[in-house]
Length: 203
Image (tube, rainbow, N blue to C red; front, side, top):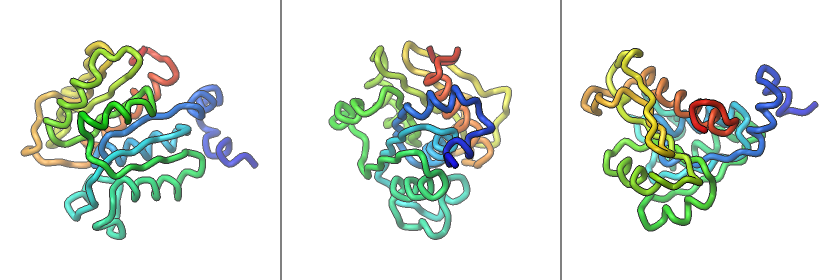
């Protein structure tokens, strides 16, 4: 039995084949990144590259893909562990580093698709400024995913090679709730898949 084929048999075979050869980098493994990584892996992504320097804390457990056994441990390595325990066909590369202008040059050589999954505005700005206009790269970002939100407020905006998803107005002070965070995470994951297979939201 082909295990990958069996797990993915409810998906379209031609898309499964495309995803098998694809790779994505995820910058940050918090509420967005940890969930995006698992979603893309479940869909059959060939390789995922994870970057973060944080450790798992109690306050992460309400919305991030971790449990009590992960407390105090590296987010990237625990995300890698969970994917490998759940999905046997995705190769996971984890690096415990803080993203900076100095290391983006090297990291950007690994894949063509990058998903920004940071909390802090200055980190979002750093990544946006670095990737904007790079025609051989695609950047997917989350912007506004706090509070309980409204589904009608979620928008998708495109600026050159950058796709931004969110309500573009909510602030961290509004609180972070898994259902709303997960909606944006899922849309970011879906956008990456659409880019990979060449569908409308990312050509």
